[in-house]
Length: 455
Image 1: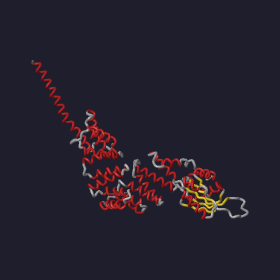
Image 2 (image 1 turned 90 degrees about the vertical axis):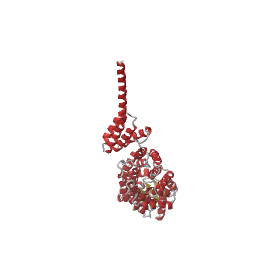
Image 3 (image 1 turned 180 degrees about the horizontal axis):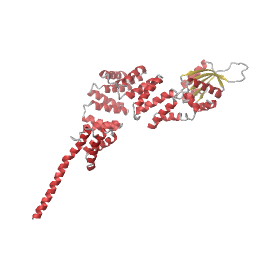
Image 4 (image 1 turned 180 degrees about the vertical axis):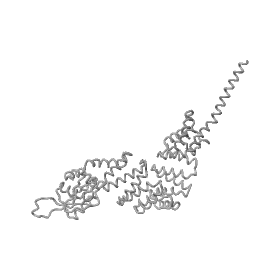
């Protein structure tokens, strides 16, 4: 009997001990998880990560620990690992007082934005509009995402919702203005932009949109001034520099464009943004126009490494691939005005057996009036004139260049004209030249003539 009582007491003791163990564990576990947050707040991020991992090694389903581990990774600038933890929480956790959904959605949406995962970010911000329906900023951000996804119709509605919630939301007014402008609602667009700037003259992003409108209207001088002000907004500085640089390009002020585009490239330390690729692309175009072909190639190669299919970069690299091994073509494209004129004279003499009478530098290259080179000059007969034009433009010549050449040929009373173009000719230009007194000499034949002349 006594042994039975002892056995019962042992069983009861074990039960009490087990119960006590689970009570202590349930009480202490949340405290240990809360310790992660305290360590993060104290700046002890490495310790916070270690503690979170210790807890998860014993209980992988502790989603509050996953959440705090994600916060610790974010604080440690390890955003990719943070996002992985947040995804685990999002797929499994039940939100409540310990794990507030509003804070979680704000943080997760920020991580998606950091990695340009627009569709995922969009989903999070749409959930945020349900959790805090009176926060205009969420609607504004959704509008920005739709704008980046080329859904201007959807973007406009969310920007309008943002200003309905906050009539003084200057950035939303500016965005509405730009969308209205692109949809040809010019007066309404101008009102929104002006309202944005009146509401907040120091919201410099408004000047960016004003600059875009002025640039599209070809008011480049005013656009340049607007983009100058827009640079004061860190978020728009790179975009404003690119736009200002392209304004200078459009009025052929290449020397002004290059510094702006170089600064735009420098704004992105990682060099991974899409805007940075555009800055490099336009910078390469400036170098190409100013005959700094090697520098242009350097920019195209950087772009190609980041994105093989970016615009016509592959075609540009192909076009100039033989430049390093072809000194004649390299000199033709990169030499200064005086040296270039000599190259053209030699090419005319050796390639066409024509002597230059006059040689005039032009913005697109060189123009020569020439006559046939003959040794039997004893009769002193008046010789026929020929118009030779040497182009080193970056783009293939259009038929407008052929028309202008023929008009000049008639004006100078020339018998025939020859047009040399390192970038070749468009199909319409070739078609227009048929059956007319003009001979088109493209890149391949030009290279042969240059090598023949020994230049």
